[in-house]
Image (cartoon, rainbow, N blue to C red; front, side, top):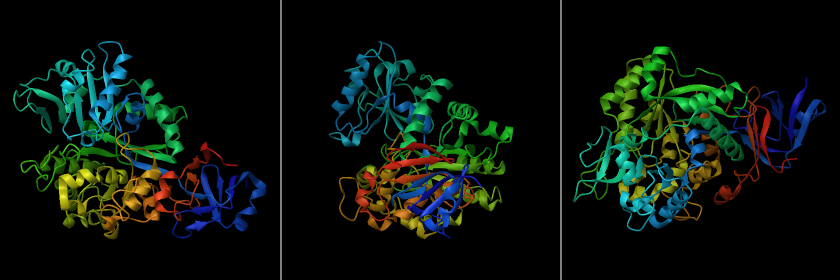
Length: 533
């Protein structure tokens, strides 16, 4: 028997309950065929294509990002990057620099701004952009992706005036004195702008995804659950057909395509080990940063604001049930406690009706739950698809918006203790793709600078390193219905693994973000390797 790789002298965390920690591992083709001690596997060394002496390095299963927008991430690398702009003027300077090198009349697009970091914390306006880009239409998405900032020319091209009504599930910010639009578009109001923006062609999407894959491998990602539409699926299919797809992709169906999917007979799980259908992506509410997340009680300081229900409870219930009857799971965006409750109610109605009982329904984000709703995820078999980095990035906004209710925010410990399955991701390009930063956030609930203090933000919700790593591996595999073939390093599982520079299970958790990925193996071949003999 020809063995392709034997890894020895390692600190291998398999996450396989029957053999959780071993020193050696053997790979043949694209499968793990054996794990154990060095002595157990050295006998296979003579027939191995290559033996890797790990020199004590830590190995874990390959990571999966369970919620991101992968094509958008690749495209964002070419747009104006407004992340970490700590002042309005800093953001405007980046836009002005791009305007100076872009022909007049061409669109300027970017994302990543966060007005809560700026002095005063107020939303910017079209007039701010007009100062530096009067002759270019400009549209810039906030870091959450739920709010857009446009200049006057962009509003004019979109036909947005003081007479334009708020669309269902969206809102246009208006000047209180004149009633004219300020340039801030919330939730589905952004669709008024999106219809003007040209989607990338398949070739452009393929190039963007290739760039994204290279970066993904560097942080140990071998899989992604992407929340995108037609162009993204076509690009991934092209890469699959040309044998260039080096990620395991779970693709969601946009709600607007649900009827077509049902008519064609598509179901969750269609596909193979590299590209398959997950579920229909639905929206229940907005975002914390935009104060559009749908809440049971008003936001602190805004007694009339409980957020924006992007979908009514009746619509959610009907759509979840219709998809379930067709064999399609629902992956529902829900941030606020009321939004999460409405989603749970919709799934409960479908479960009680006996529809799609084996489907892996998911709530995407689950940022704040009423305490009485925490046990319901396990009771209803709902996967909690969460992004740990949101917790540490948004904790100050959460305190300002939700106050004491934040005790139920990003409630990983409570969810696990109540039997729910966690599947972790980044929401990239909203947040950083780096898995180590996500694990650090989950374990410490602190930022890299140590804030808010030694114990972290609501420390009772911290989880262990093993639990966090599992959420990026075994939990992610469960969330896609693929735990039988991936998520752990056990004989018969896919040979997807990551070699780390440090043992994140034993080092000071504050040092986890500094841990590098030394090598990433996907499907039995190295797609990234640095300093690995």
